[in-house]
Structures are given as C-alpha cells and as structure tokens.
Length: 153
Image (cartoon, rainbow, N blue to C red; front, side, top):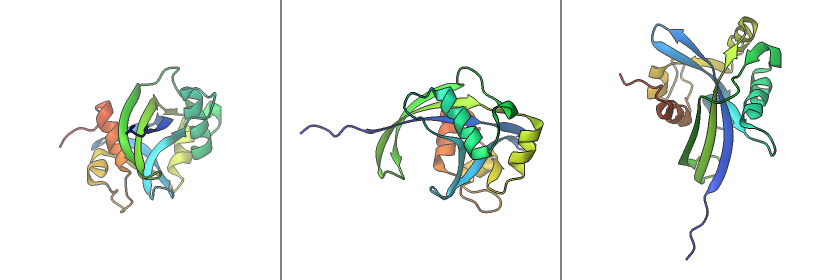
C-alpha cells in the first residue's frame, strides 16, 4: 500500500512587533475563516517569490501601499513542518517564510485603528485568547515557538 502524499502549503508571514510592558506583542488580524487572530500572511501564488507574497498580503490585508512598510530581501526564517490543517482537514507539509515587517508611523496608526487587528502578547498566545476574548490561532503559538520568540513564563 502506497502512503498518500501530504498536502503541501507554501506561504509567507509578515511579522510586525512592538515592545510592551509584558514583552513583545505581534500584530495579528481576525480571520473569519479560522475564527481566530492570525499573523498577516497567506499562500504563495504560482511564480511569486516568498517576499512578493508577504508584500502582497500586507497590502491586501492591512490596506497599505508599498511605501508604507518595509520587508527585508530575505526572510527571518524559513520554517518547514507538518501539522494538521484545520481548513483542509488533513495533515499538511508547510513551508513558511517569515519576514519582519516594519510599518511607517502612518501605517501603524491605520493598522491599530482597524477593529480586526490586534497586538497579541505572549500571555495571549499561551492562553489562546486575548483579554477581550478573541481566539488566537494555534499557528501563532506554533510559529513563535519555532522562531524562539515565545518565552516561557
């Protein structure tokens, strides 16, 4: 019996962070699909580089123009892992490129002014919910953990 090949998912994440009294907080956005807060990012389109994907997702999800944010040429990390996809309902092999996202002051104000966006801190991630009760995607915890950015209490 031949094993079924894993579903593949290649995506890019734009990781914006800010310093808070409780440590770093990360910009997340509410997803109706996942019914949770998740990092800005998404699936890579055919022929698109990971950086192009991250930039497109920032523009689409945060409604910004290219001059309002910066992404480095290379990702902070390329993460490969297998996890269960809640949307596809099957085990999936992921290749995720994570890019640090720097927002202009104007872009930051705009992002903070949108109710679907939230700064999510380590306590929120560990709890799985924000102080106002919104669910934090388990993928946020998984990615921060793989990046070594989720300190233990």
